[in-house]
Image 1 (cartoon, rainbow, N blue to C red):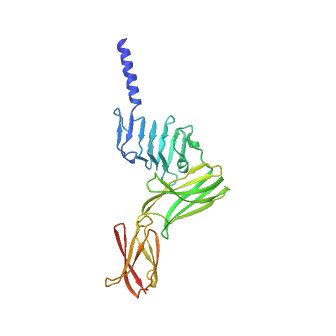
Image 2 (tube, rainbow, N blue to C red; image 1 turned 180 degrees about the vertical axis):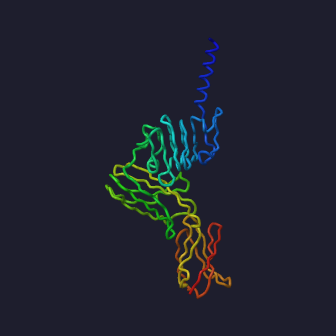
Image 3 (cartoon, one colour; image 1 turned 45 degrees about the vertical axis):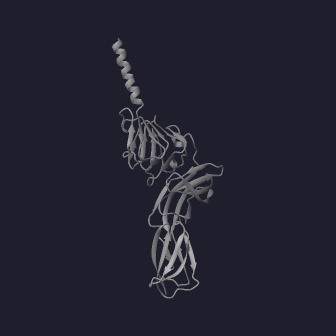
Length: 323
């Protein structure tokens, strides 16, 4: 009898031990490429609890990723593919955590049991929050989504500005959009507001131009505010502004009486010089980030000149032709 009791204790002890198996993300990467630190001999395939600490990003890649248990997020959970979880599973978002959907189209989904949300519904969820099968469709335990149906949200470079375009298929009790930008998906800056349609069942188109962009990867999102103050965050999009830190001088060819110079909007102040083909400095002035206009007291004669720009220890040289 004692042996049977001992075996039962060992059996239940093993069950209890396995139920506490936890894996913690030690790197930021796709779910299947993260370096996990697991307890009790667990792997990410057998763990019942997954922890994503602050400063770490776990990305659900394209395709299906299955996990049954509890995911606790203090960092960022980025949904690009489909996260599939059992009906008893939960996702806990602590204060300061982030949930974003950055997959193409409607590929980004979260399924818990028989309930699935995607795209804008994911980005509408605020933190802190707890998601389970019972509240997934209504935005979790911490938020109620505003009644705006977003059709698309895109970003493209046009005339040295980032042109953001989006459309809604319906709006109800809706006040305005706020366009926000981020470098790291953590700190967001409000760029401006765009008035909404109030009540609409037809397609409404919107645009916003960001002339203060910086070089590198930029993230944009829409914050939708209802008349009663309800807030909904829509899909995060990104655009890689590679090469936008290059300086441009125009018009080129020019008249020699004035010229414009445009630099990256996050560049430090610096100086600009105009040098002729003999190496003589003809003009010198201060240049600031963004757009600059210079009127020359002594117009330049016809010919080729070198425009030298120095900002933050970096030097760039451009050819300027005067007719």
